[in-house]
Picture 1 (cartoon, rainbow, N blue to C red):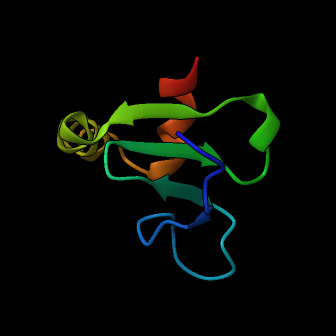
Picture 2 (tube, rainbow, N blue to C red):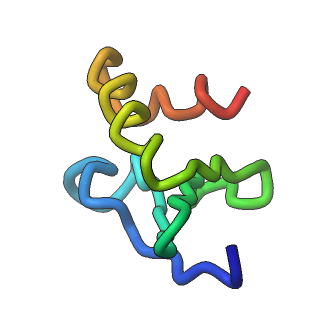
Picture 3 (cartoon, rainbow, N blue to C red):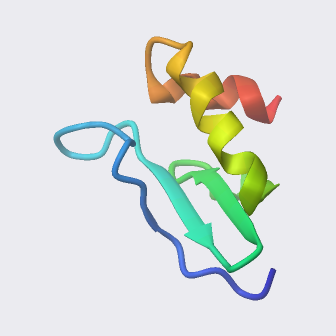
Length: 71
């Protein structure tokens, strides 16, 4: 994936973006990171696996549980 164009993910939470998750995509991959700690890691998924990732997130109470997926 080349240099990504990061943007706030629409599912990252209401208000002032305290639960801000950023997303960048290319034709073949989707990258996701925590905007409060972008250097801590990025999850990069093949585009076809992204739907499964979203389904897994729906099983958690908030998108801030994203940290559990990063390790």
